[in-house]
Image (cartoon, rainbow, N blue to C red):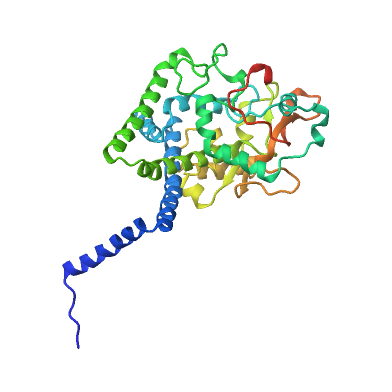
Length: 365
């Protein structure tokens, strides 16, 4: 017996009922529901990190030849992710100018030996004999850094030395403070606009919460991916600027070229090249030529490799038994060199001090 061909409406009805059945099953199955929303959070976080990188490119005028387009796109994207666009643009610009300068860089500036010894309550002479953290303690430190590190940095500027801030007489160090120590009086309006952008997004989400009355929906749809974005931003930037093979420099030996090339590229595979727009694989190029659009950075990197050599480590963390992995590094020390112009400050492993909760004071630096 020959079966009849289903009608068009019947076919579309079947096509629509199967996904609806899947949604119904997910909503009525607790394990499937939480698996789905967590997978969504991870994937959406990766995609939103790409948006964060595009906004970061806008801050360097690398998205468009027109400044108003750069600032409009960057402002909208960063505000959506609750990142203060103009504030970050200004501080990141100074980071690029003084990259790896031990006194003027704003990001990932480690304590010197004496300061580190004071933090852990030991004498400088015995630092070489001190072991490193237990794996569980190190895991907790990584977890703390990856979950709240970005937000705490934006609020308190914890990775910056006191010698790098523009207005040293002030004690407020938030990227949201237009009258704080991080910015000049002439930059006041830019900081206010950044704050208004973030406040508008928060107000919009509050209205959506009032409309739908479900914090759980807001949590899984926005907050979880938003937290993953911060994880990736902290991980990318930390691994770029923290490695036993690249030094920091004292004022006598620092130069722009030395600082820009003391950076480590990281190969994240397709996530780094496609979703993160080469920010992880071509970070040395980014520091040398910050205005290059991300889609041209691989070409530039290939051009400078014959001059600089390979600057990439395959994988997320260097696996070398003769060196400490990046997350275990705490102090820097000076090479024994009589020529001050050739002095570099190199990472050494050690026990973790207590977590920072505010920017270091001058007396502790």
